[in-house]
Length: 314
Ligand SMILES: [Zn+2]
Image: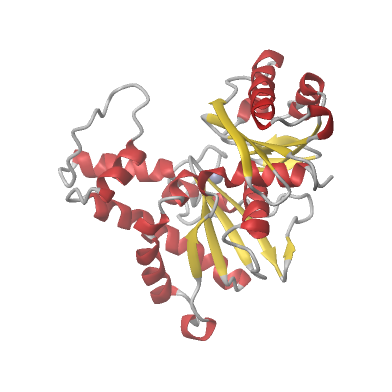
């Protein structure tokens, strides 16, 4: 890619747009609430977000491209299965945004996008065998193996949030039970924090119960402030993360795992515990050498940056 490129990461609650240059530097960015339905007007609101960010970057829409990262299984640019964006399944996001903006648009999986950014310019740079694990409301995944991005038969490789780790366990938005994302995501962290509060193992007196209160975020802030009990709640998350990562490493012999999404950006708080747990449970841990585990260099912007990169490579 040579001209500036736009990327849009549509998550469960917010949509983040960036414009990047050919070296992956973010020139401008902005965010807006995610569409609450698949209507044309909701999607055109996304278009207005992109148009504003393009204008801030001084980019000419007729000379740019737009990649759109979507959480779920994406085929031919459209969501076909999405527990977290069900209202966008089958919706022609590419077509509506192309009409509204006059740019070439490509829909991609959000974790594939995050890895594309990190592999080109971030924490996965130079790695031959690396996984992106995005930790948000759910868990997304993407792999580069033997130095090549892995798509799978239908382009659906990496739906690791729905690996079953507890047969008959917690019900999942996918319709299954016991999926990894029910135990190791931001949503799971909020559940562990709630249990700790209810059982008196943790005390947070900072607005719980107010609209929009994000218990996972509050727990992370409490852990940073060394509030008693908060680290133990993060240890629960770390245990489940290690279990799923161990499954990935024994299957794929990974050298590196990059943690994306909002919770991934906080990896310094729990990665040491994950690695300790992983070392204790991983088959042949000593023979494998250490696993590099850390946050995405782009933080929670990795999906938008990578969507821009993939959108420019049609
Ligand atoms: Zn599931």
